[in-house]
Image 1: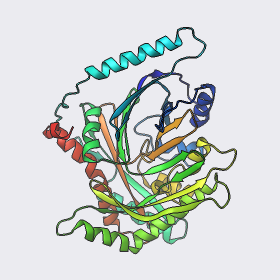
Image 2: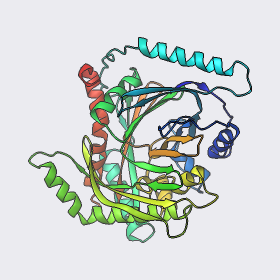
Image 3: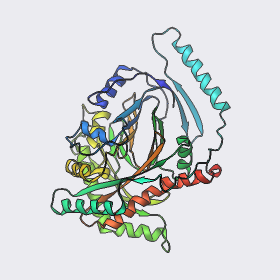
Image 4: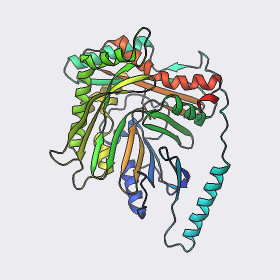
Length: 412
């Protein structure tokens, strides 16, 4: 996407209300295109947007000082079809202006010329962070203690699952887009994103849909249950069978599928919510997951914004039931999550929506990179194993930085 923003707003009580008003005011004629998105809002909701939806106590500091929501409505879009290898250029032409059409046509010519001249070179090599520059929000022992405390709440019947996460931060003076270019090649996922948000950037390769609205069909796709794809002396197929047979992982996954059904039930027609796919194993660059698909028909009067509120934040990043799980997260995690565990995606002028969860992601801000990963804690959780799971999930992100250190020409 390219172009400046069509509009901006000061801080508001609920960013989604503001965004809904902006999109309603911008009347855009439908385009005869097969692409899912030809214009609208693109951006993110941070995990802490949930404070606009739920009464969560404010116990921990916000160390990153980033917005709860950041969205743009671009005037110009460059749409690349990965199947046909074709590029479409879309420019919004203001109605009622005599020269609006000619301005838009001129902008298309500018974009076409810029694309034909574009020859991105290899990214600069980066220096690896020294040990003094790397900081975790938890030590290994502290994370394991937090897992043990979460298990106490679970065994007391206050909650069934809590997702605990840890953040890793280190200095980075390179180009965040270079990191994105490498990440999308070594860790391809259904959702790849790079958002330049002025004073910060968010970059990610997320495997997990949060919510999609296509026509009137709403979908959420919970991922819960993880194994590494490779381990010394173990085949991928062996690890796959182990994952499918793991009673703890299956129980956790079923719990979150039920939560997804409940979330969609808030905004879907009665008796339309269903599980189309259940506990399929999907493999990614470094890990494999159990995945299910939950769908339903959106009820009259509901829209993309009410759907997004209904599922936010994902149960797979908070726990079940969500309100109590989020209170425990606020108690046990050392700081506010910020972007991690929120949502990234688009809401089109046509009312369609596709969003993913802000995981397998990085935030670049004020000369530092922040990575974060979590693990779902249940009654049967082993603290050491849950800590190790967060490290497995961080590995793909760290691999991209390792390649940038060595020179990533072969991965672009």
